Amino acid sequence: MEIDLGQGRSTDQVRPHNLSMVLRYLHLAGPLSRAALTQRTELSRSTVATLVAELTERGLVVEGPPRSPSGPGRPSPEVRLADDGPVVLAVEVGVDSLAVAIVGLGGDVRSQVRVDRERSPVAAREVVAEVHRIGGPLLDAQPAPLVAIGVSIVGVVRRTDGLVRIAPNLGWRDEPLGELVAEAFGADVPVLVGNDADLGALAEHQRGAGVGLDDFVFLCGEVGVGGGVIMDGRPLRGADGYSGEVGHVAVNPDGRPCRCGSRGCLETEVGEPALLRAAGVDPTRGGREAVDEVLHAAARGDERAVRALREIGGWLGIGVAGIVNIFNPRRVVLGGYFADIFRYVDDQIGGALNSRALPATGASVEVVASRLGAQALLLGAAELAFAPLLADPTLFPGVPTETRRAG
Ligand SMILES: [Zn+2]
Image (cartoon, rainbow, N blue to C red; front, side, top):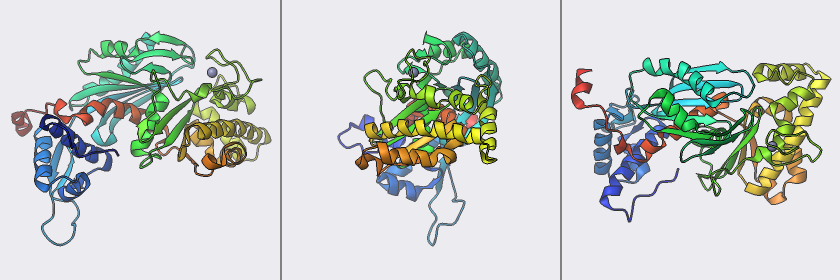
């Protein structure tokens, strides 16, 4: 986590900065004693006490006796996130599913609904209406204050206003998704939209297989293939914020046409339909069940299934080796259905790294399966939505003291 001490800032900036630092530690590490917060923030004990008091006043944290004894002497009070603190609505728009969740600080998923969707082009308005149909009741059923809506979308997004430039697998071009969601929920809270793999990378960085790493790539396989890159501890954006579209790097000149207009993209060679096709399963059936079928068949020793996984593993290895050469990550985290097939393709990816990656980059990289699994994108959407509040906790006005007492 990148934190500086606020040197060179004016007093007006230092206080929100320090509040942010304390809240962020609790958000990422869970409950901490006041002594531990003092140690981690390198602020004075009295400053930490003042900051905790302000965060408490704002309804973001609570302080109480430690849950477990911490040794001799007077125990330091434990600070934790308030149960009735702010929440966000996290939305995941996939090619064949929609998911909506209410998430509190600390990545605390309070409620969640996931529904399957037919795998065909669909109007953005229709998708948003469905999101509202399943998300509305979740919001109505929870009493905590909503501070933002975060949306993960399987497409290329302009972060400033949530315009989806292109989502080939939904058939979208220049759809104002952020505006449509805001309109549907009538929300007077910000709506933030991000690319699914970028958000998966964010979530894995904060809570999953990328914790503590400054340089890693999240490679997500679904119908499409997306990549999210964290370099020097920060998301890699590119000139327009569209970087990391590794799914559309051409790997096979003789490959199938891709929905992006090109041919033989990594996506067409290793996306879920490619596995199903190779295994002799109708690729339009799609979904995790169909993938599971192939995996069960492979586990039984079914030759066609084993061959299909080997074929996918070969192309995936080529893709991973290219990614490793370009970005020199410490780790490549495989998400989506890649996490499910990982143990079948692990050796082939290793082989491709040996034969195709530069010795300098290939030797220092580790390829692992996602730790957050199917939750990565929703948790990433929640992180995106919480980002403004975490950067400046004074944005949260808190619950009036009288109401808190009365409640
Ligand atoms: Zn493509």
